[in-house]
Image 1 (cartoon, rainbow, N blue to C red):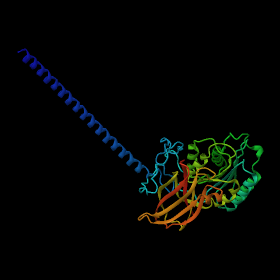
Image 2 (spheres, one colour):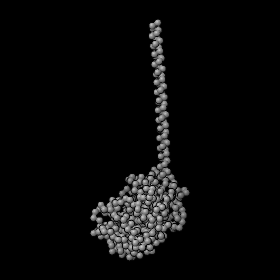
Image 3 (tube, helix red, strand yellow):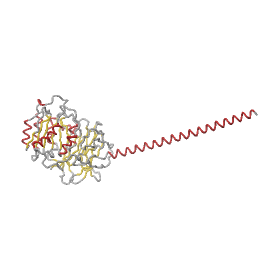
Image 4 (tube, rainbow, N blue to C red):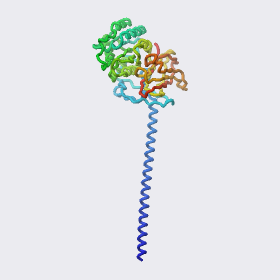
Length: 423
């Protein structure tokens, strides 16, 4: 009897332990199933987020910030400008989103930038007889300035509404001189060539070119000269130290002005090579870095004399890549041959640039119509970071515009692409 009782107790205990183990096993299985389900949900959600992010990048790559030809385009969609002021400088920006080489990007979606409500334009379009300003740094060689001025004023349109000149980077400041004809203003330049005794005493002092442009507009009003549509030509030897160009860009745009700056590849001071370059970018002009000895040749080749921009685009590039620019809509009233100019670097001298192809294709079937191919050696021989040639376009047609380029560095280069027609 005692053995039967003991066996019964043992059986009860074993059964009880077995039930507990089964319950614990079931609980563990439920917990494992819950963990597996949670992980699956998290992984699926993460994959969906990545897909969404990739789609957004592809779409952003094709959206320029402004519409051409009247205003400048920038192909970097990630610029962080200040929305309160449409003229605010894009000083800080993210690198442009690039289409992997050599896959072709999607067709661009053009968006028109809203006009600046606080900046009334002096004219709806540049006047046929614009004023001219010839500004030159006092740090340049007198011989370089004299020879460059000879070429500039010999080729200059004699029907301009007014002419002005100023020697900047001097202490004290030189006044801005105005004249009704090219011969008079040319004589002023030859009488006020660079004088080392007036130069700034240290290389740490930056160029006063921004202040000089402001003085030009103020002096013109005081002397009764028009500045509407002024073409401002700058020979820059000393670099600025400022980076904020918002106010001066707003002033130039309000006067429908255009800046072309030739910057020395061997600067005499300052530390901001892109400041003047970006002023040119934002006014449909050009910024070219030039060897001092080649200034005379490049003032003759520069898109200054009797030209009107009909396509202006700015694009940020780097490495080995393929970029699509806004389409080129050719006006109906232009000749077949037009001037195509572009920069290959936003600083000088040539270092990371290897090659660039600017292509214009049929908008309907993407058939290549014409292109320009430039190698590093081509621009090195010219002693500059700019290139210019002539191409034929059919008036009224629209062209798909692309850049295929190669750089040895992954640093961002801000290039200027321009098409000008002669009036």
